[in-house]
Image 1 (cartoon, rainbow, N blue to C red):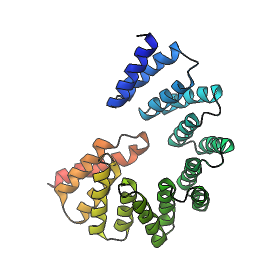
Image 2 (image 1 turned 180 degrees about the horizontal axis):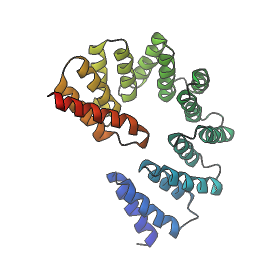
Image 3 (image 1 turned 90 degrees about the vertical axis):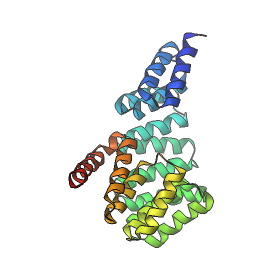
Image 4 (image 1 turned 120 degrees about the vertical axis):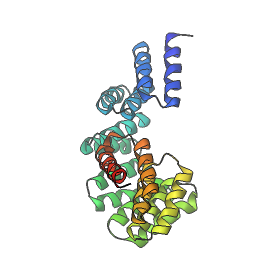
Length: 261
């Protein structure tokens, strides 16, 4: 086995086990051995970003962007990394590059919409989501995202239809069930919100924010011990650097609940 194959083998093993830091180290070794291998830039950049080293991930992905500017998978990874790193203008530019290569890339339209949504440019977000649905009316990514934008604007009926359409297309789409839970929770329909959250977790046990919503539902129902368990599950699962503030808030709530018990 060559050194390159050995490094790639280690990287795959570490990625499968979730050890992103070790995977990034193995991929860095592989890239030094074969710098002309463009896909390594994407895999390494994603591994670095997902392990919290977003800035380093962006540097690697930018090198790959120069080496192969029409590699759409790499461009998606770069745009997503910029978005996660709170660099919306750079993210938009990358998604626009993808659309310049292929104007029918549905996920690029939705990703642009997510950037606008995050900046509270809801009309622009909805325009992007509808452009995506004009290309693929059954895109669950676009439907879920459109539902979120409509929900934020107070159009609950239209949002509900989006989520229900996703579930009709894919009954096991955890995100749609979670989105329904958030809508029901906002409407104070706690029983339906709890049922939808549990459905979301059934289909995706790692969907961290479903546990947070379940914790809030249990708090409202004065089920303190259950709320505490769900909040602890949220902290165990949610490790994204972008969620640092909300993790701190939940940790403070947990400390308060333990003092009351």
